[in-house]
Image 1 (spheres, rainbow, N blue to C red):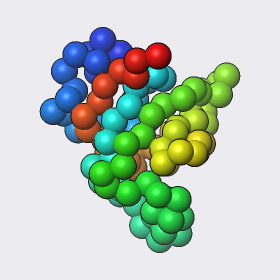
Image 2: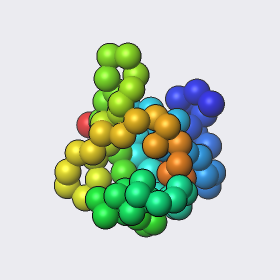
Image 3: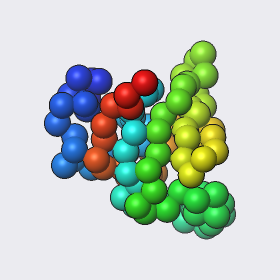
Image 4: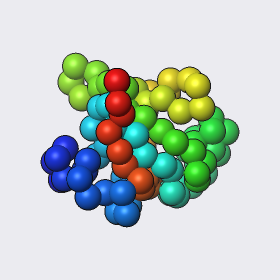
Length: 93
């Protein structure tokens, strides 16, 4: 899925956080995973209904920095793949 497809058609589509390009935001729908990862991620506020925005990616693409609830959080792409998002829109700057 490329950036133009995300900004045009994904207001009703659910995707994963690792596909969210920079300067786009979405709403967390579901967090998959188990054990320590899920406990840690939920404890940091990554819960259903929270708005999350992609800020930037590291030079080699991993990890990626996200902004939610007033703070920035860096996640590996493998971790971001376990988080489903919807209502994706482009951030107006």
